[in-house]
Image 1 (spheres, rainbow, N blue to C red):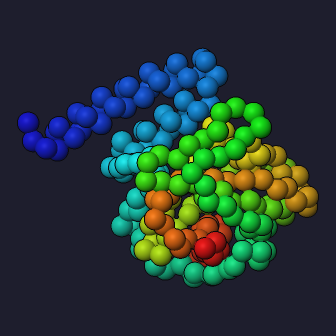
Image 2: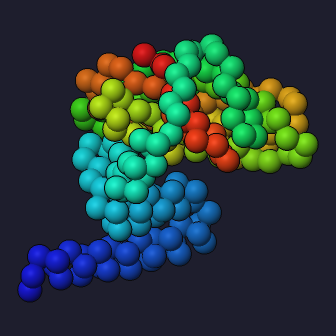
Length: 203
């Protein structure tokens, strides 16, 4: 059996296993299990390795080409960033090995990793309410991108799923798990409908 066939077989087995987990998680009402399923399926078919629990976004050649064609706009913590449907402002950041929670167990970073907690102020600039989507990534100086960690298992006041009413600022948190030795990073997001890509310097 060739390496390619072995890889395809392993992916098929993994996909079936995660579908079973999804069914169990769906009926038990466990949002965390559903998150793990989505992340696992994404990793299985993209070839991403998440050693140490760090969720790395692997760019395709097309995505790299698109990024190279974008206008990179750099901002600082405290600046108001105007995206397509929201304005955001990074209020503060904090690094930690363990989160604190009023309800539920605290989250503990994996060995060799740490959490970056980002407090955001978000304002819906459209004329209708909608739920916040965490379409942001953490980017290090080499261009490596880190996806948000599952907030519902780590912190209380997270932004994901919060309803944003028009013209009313809402504050909350996003959280990322990154390598412990990562010293410099930014929050990144594209502005829909444009070639603009915003990088907000966090550290």
